[in-house]
Amino acid sequence: MPKPILLSVDDDSDVLRAIERDLRSQYGAEYRVMGSDSPETALDILKQLKVRNDSVALLLADQRMPRMDGVHFLQEAMRIYPDAKRALLTAYADTSAAISAINDVGINYFFLKPWDPPAERLYPQLDDLLDDWQASYRPAYEGIRVLGTRWSPRSYELRDFLARNHVPYQWIDVELTANDPDTKRLLDALGPDAPNLPIVLFPDGTKLLESLPAQVAQKVGLRTRAETNFYDLAIVGGGPAGLAAAVYGASEGLHTLMIEREAPGGQAGMSSHIDNYLGFPTGLSGADLARRAVVQARRFEVEILAPQEVAGVRIEGPYRILKLADASEISCHALLIATGVQWRRLEAPGIDRLQGAGIYYGGSATEAMSCKGEIVYVVGGANSAGQAAMNFSKYADKVVLLVRGNSLSTMSKYLDDQIQKTRNIQVWTHASVAEVHGESHLQEISVLCSDTNKVERVPATAIFIFIGALPQTGWLGDLVQRDPRGFILTGPDLMRNGERPEGWTLDRDPFLLETNVPGIFAVGDVRHGSVKRVASGVGEGSVAVQFIHQYLSKV
Ligand SMILES: Cc1cc2nc3c(=O)[nH]c(=O)nc-3n(C[C@H](O)[C@H](O)[C@H](O)COP(=O)(O)OP(=O)(O)OC[C@H]3O[C@@H](n4cnc5c(N)ncnc54)[C@H](O)[C@@H]3O)c2cc1C
View 1 (cartoon, protein in one colour):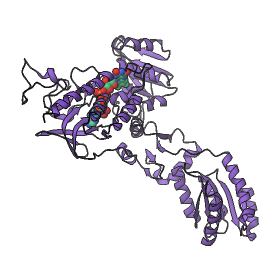
View 2 (cartoon, rainbow, N blue to C red):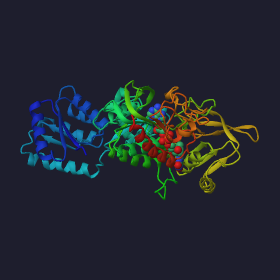
View 3 (cartoon, rainbow, N blue to C red):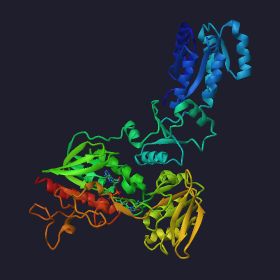
View 4 (tube, rainbow, N blue to C red):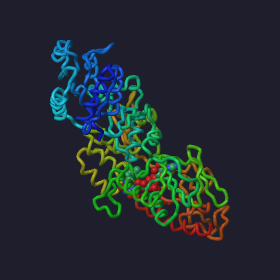
């Protein structure tokens, strides 16, 4: 924990050195002693300290300074650090100014120069002031702070990114806390930078304005560049299937790289509660599962690049070469595609404009907590929508589940039962979103009721959309065969009337999870015919490694 600061200001550098020396010898173990020979510079220092979230315990200023006297400096400094103890250093002739300052502007004490011996004329009084300050001192938050507004899509994207990558941070909503004196002081200290939201403040005093996830990723040490350019096994996608393959591959001696576009965990990382994963009788959150898997993968020395996107792939003899979004390339012998699926977009006027400002795909834990006391709409009738509704019901006043059909028949029975028993969840059947309304953020939605053919307009602050999924295979070009919906064909699904796929050159059939290109495998939700579940993704990721070994033994 950084030490609280004692700041002294004196334009006479000999006096400044002397006071710093005396402060340091008595208080250096517990406090950081700083000094400045100009009140203007000292105010700038205080602003920087405020932005860093450092604590200031004492301000000690000489009364007679050109341009700004000590009383004036302390008045200005109080605006930045109102709780710091304030003391003046005065010559005998200035004592009446010092006494009126005690009365008029709340200065705590004045010391006469010279203060020798300090043990009698400085320390006892300072001990008193500092004891007093310590009594109400609460150490400030030391980690990353993010300033933004709830309705800003960029703030949402950044917070979601930090949460999914398990980077702890303190969120400061500058609109919600606009009247909070501490927020005001922080914004004042930021000066002309303050409007450039979202702002990320780091404990080392640096800041990122209008910050993007990739910039923050670099600053917090998330790795986006590979250590070398060749791997035995490269895995694209860090959901459950990719993570399982990474753990099995690396634990069995393969030099393994996993590349993930957003955050390890994939869709499962967004799940508030996975009830049906083996070995966790009371369930666990997707974020917890992802965190555990990442720790395990790192223990086996899997190299994880996140956030980093794979933009293309090509074949050169035995090498499979991946092109990354930053234009760098990585080659490997075996490639595993585990890119899963992404939420289908909802087509309705206003949806795209308000995305991130009340309209969300999937349901992140970050947003769930912001919905305290509100009415939340969840669109979709399958398990993911049901789980989200259950999660939001813990925070929101009311959750309305908008379902196109006449029941929750596509949802697992246990979830349907839980929903029916949850007092603040309403299931609105025959309902679909016709339009969404709001200027800077969502305020109302129009719901088309297919049974009455009427449109109802209702107030809403947040809609979470779970309406099916699209496979993430666009980056593959024409390289691997897919079904008409874009899901990747593997193993037996590639065989036509007992014939191997076109262009297949090996004297064996494609392995169970192998695509029509030898050495390129596909697992999890992105694979045609897979069971779209965490356990099946994990199973496929693990099993694929056995086929990868067989493939590598003949490369
Ligand atoms: C809200 C919710 C709740 C769920 N609840 C459950 C549950 O309770 N039980 C259960 O068994 N299943 C549940 N599921 C389903 C389960 O999460 C999925 O079946 C599982 O996550 C699929 O794993 P995957 O690894 O195949 O793909 P995904 O989890 O989709 O992961 C794919 C990853 O690939 C990354 N990616 C995509 N393209 C690229 C690229 N070009 N470059 C780099 N990376 C890329 C994506 O960012 C993503 O992280 C739930 C799903 C959701 C959304």
